[in-house]
Image (cartoon, helix red, strand yellow):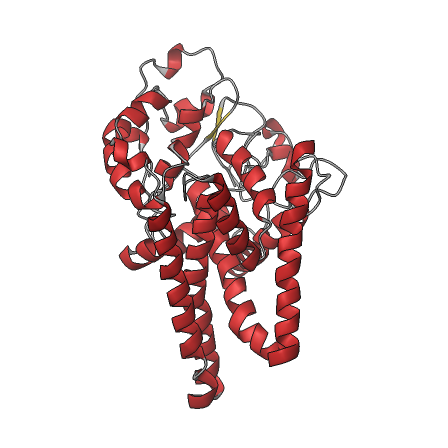
Length: 390
């Protein structure tokens, strides 16, 4: 379990509603972002365009390698072996594709290069090739970083409140500690719901802002420049982003006409689906845990919210190939302009400052996924510090 954090002032002395925090033994950290930045060596803040581009080349080489290997699948296999090899190709190609996705994500944070033009050009090309509207998502993702860990202002993987999931007030709830449905304890139902989330959350988020803020009745989408999420001066950048995705879809249609739709499905769509699965899984586990709370406005500040991020390792090889997006994500939320190739070193220094404030979850990934999905259903309607419940 996550250990409690030792503050400079005791929770019991605070005027805020900290009932859940006290019950859980959770204490609120008290440190400044300056203390974090001062602990990091100066060279870790430096961005090198050529080094960043070398990682793009690295990922493209893997994509070409797996693509070439896949040309032999239909030749040397059939039946179950054929299906297993194409599934393996999809997973391997998705690792390389997710790595490229991460580099485009760095471009959006201006962590790829000191040049805004290079950041936006590289990011636009990569994200469009993965059917992600680059500028649109860059804008909304920036809001996630600014409000990380906030109970209501963080608009991605944020907790639903008790009333939003159709539950009665806590004092009238006969099953206060859950479960609230006979299906909640069904592994089959829970696993099915989790898989639907992992496969479809990312595209539906981009298209309809599902899993984000859907409080408005208007069409909220990363492809709609008139969405409330965007400011007027961002209109044409959103249009440009949608056009980039449209151009990629057009290229896929042309490829289907030339090579056949089956080829496009096997070589592009299977890895694309796996990339969406991977990105959703990684981000969900970075910001969701039954042991990590969310802070309301009277307690929240940027550094406290960033400290609620969770580092997880997917193994040395995948951590390396995915540019450490998962095992150094705490560092990324403290300094989002830091390139990934400095985050491992910076994390070592920041951990010394954070102490108990830093959390790395060693729980096996599949186990963590299932536990979080079944235990993190909602939060209460009141409280400055609120934990997930089921």
